[in-house]
Amino acid sequence: MYRFLLTPRWVTLHIVVLLVIPAFVFLGNWQFGRFEERSASSELITGNLEAAPVPFEQVEVGEANRFRTVTATGTFDAAHELVVRRRSQNGRPGFYVVTPLVTAGGRAVLVNRGWVKAAATADTPPDVPAPSAGQVTVTGRLRLSETEETTGIKDREGLPQGQILLIDSEALAGRLPYGISDGYVELTAQDPQAQAAPEPVPAPEVGAGGGLNFAYGVQWWLFIGVAIGGWLLLIRREVNDRKAASVAS
Image (cartoon, rainbow, N blue to C red):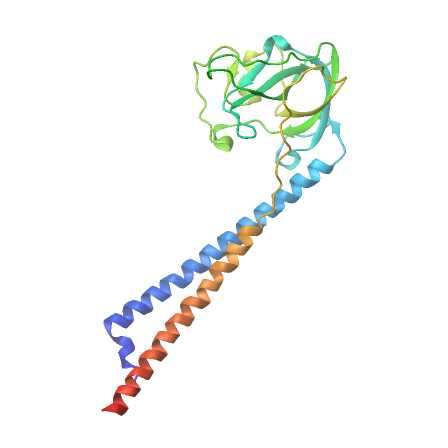
């Protein structure tokens, strides 16, 4: 009765099912892995955002302290201020404004003071509010230096004076007359407050912690049951059809 399972048509179906099952297992496990990664990242970022501010120099610049709230005190160096191209905010093209904050020790911390809208062309200098004069204390989110790999932005030379594509402290060190610390600070507050300032950069969206990845993982594993169930259903239907044909004859 079941010898039909060895016919070429059915052997092909068996092979397809046997290939589909491990593929669905792999895809499900991959989605569960992404769920764990994103959940861990979400918890880390949330914890860092909610933590009490600490002095910049007391924090190790690394993945574990990404978005940690830090403070730094010094004087803005407007002469070496830079604007970062290709930075959209709320659907509008523009620039980030990065100004070195020179501390009492003589080193500087790069501070992203915020966003300004683009001018008529990308090569036209945007209208940027001047940084505060005198000593200030900034509070902001610790960010890691940007690279082509982490941003997907291809760096290039030949940009207009004062414009850059990546906030990379190591690459920018050679353009400044003093040492700079790794990473940079994304400004959220300043004391004393500036009379005019760029538009603040929004806080990162923590998201659902990979909830969609978990749902997709469950979905792929459900497909395994569907594949096996469909395979068995086709076999059962073929057996019933053959029995009915045998009785009729």
